Image (tube, rainbow, N blue to C red; front, side, top):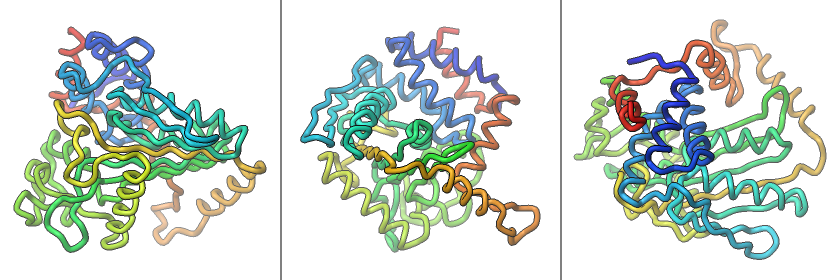
Length: 333
């Protein structure tokens, strides 16, 4: 592992993307999102993904320039063909449009297809909530999760995020419907760490603690049958609105040469009244709840990530040496 300063990690990542043909403004959007994941302790969605993004550009399955093509279907539904663009570039462009429309109509949604991996959903939820609006976001992935009671990956990790205005920080929930993300499994493999019991199956459908074996197997749904049901609901909901692939037909977020055919949904709502103060008071009351264990205070979603981020800004981020070396090579160092 190597400790890297935030400024160095950002500048090197941007330079690597620019050398791959990404315009400076798009390179910063993509690098910012990857770095934010690292800052919050979400290495699974962090800079380990940058080499693959560059490889996808080199293999012409990711367009470094486009923001996609957007068409309004009625007053409040924006249909976006991502045209194989970089995930956060297309996503933030779509969000800007539906955020402005929601201020007029009260609600607006975007369905996004043919767009590369959009990364950590928390940042999108936070940005929208910071400007006083609510965001609900859902996305799908390759089949990485086994159905409850099954032994084969057939469902995506299918995360959902919700952002709600509050002070001093908005409420942000960002959770996959799998017990862990496949990106986390890859991160454990890069670090040579063993998985926890119950996290994953190998390619034969047998339980494994070997992160490298789990990469070719399946990960478990969270909460047993409930997580499985929620993940499946998100899969069919997103597919019905975006026309994206389903299950084992989905490609493009973990490989470097297949067009990405998962789907994304964003819904922005304009609060009817300013409830941020009331919500903030309630969230603080949750935090002040007497803990079951004295050394483990009660937190609300997002608290731990922001605490990790605060320390990371001072201490830097830790990356596997091999990942950092790859990024430096792509940056021409």
